[in-house]
Length: 456
Image (tube, rainbow, N blue to C red; front, side, top):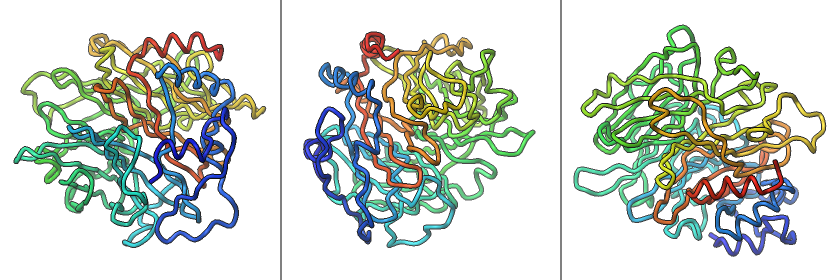
């Protein structure tokens, strides 16, 4: 696969560089396109004010954006939903989907040998280069591109590491790799008899200090039961058990991003599907937080979350569609919990928007960084601090415009002092490519730069 330097030279990712012809990245069995694909620069679609700010941040080594996998030619060229896992030796395994569009129908791609699928690629140098050279090599194909997925790393009984991918399509499956993401096998019976009524999993598979590896699934569609699910494995993805907990609030969270810290506390940030719960006193449509305070020795089967509406706000004119899947991490540098909000129809605090902007030049979609003190979170606080906008693109992210970004499933790389965030960007109905956002864990520096950007 081309290196980062090759991509920058040949694709002109940033508007500051000239637009040059882009080399095609071909997958298996892909016919030539009828017309040239939009460039990576066009797919990413950064706003002009943001491009100037990004140039400054790149120079200060606070933020960078680079392509990872380019949409191939042909009609199976929507690449989406990237998530990642990091092994102890620094290798990152990134998993993404390839399909004909952003909405996947269960069973459509059943069967091996198709170019559509769920693929896994790896990097050993923080994202400078990726393997295999052909990202659509069928040996890198895990299975059908059905449903959402999350990835993590578990410790085997023999002391080795295993990469585990949970896929929440139909059927729900688990993919396992004992050789650092080089080859995979499928555990098709992993969730047999479990998760009856659960919807898509969130983007993060965490390593809990007592519960093993844990994934969160969204709340069932039908009220009034309001059942939610966690699943966990104590044997590195071989066998699984579930915890069903009842939401105490009249809300419905889906695609919950999950993180653990300290003794085993957990918090999720979910897309809220109940407008009567999501709308705050100012009329904005907000994300929901779900908090679990862990006591050592507590039973997994007894886990319950306190649920509250946050102030992480989206444009209410679009209801639940104003937000995409979020990301949540514990930042070891700031010692705070941080959320990356994917706002499809507006900006961050002060630029959220309340209406459908008729003038296209006033439409943006953004990734916004928020944070909260973990002790305050455990004490019941739900007001997060807006830090900055990490990515700003032109137009809304919706069916007829650009698609993206799904920052969930990122990597906190304390050794390098950065967070590796993988997003997809392009169009809902294709083409769409995968990009790597690298941002410094020095959040105060990013916040200061944002205040000086002139964008706000």
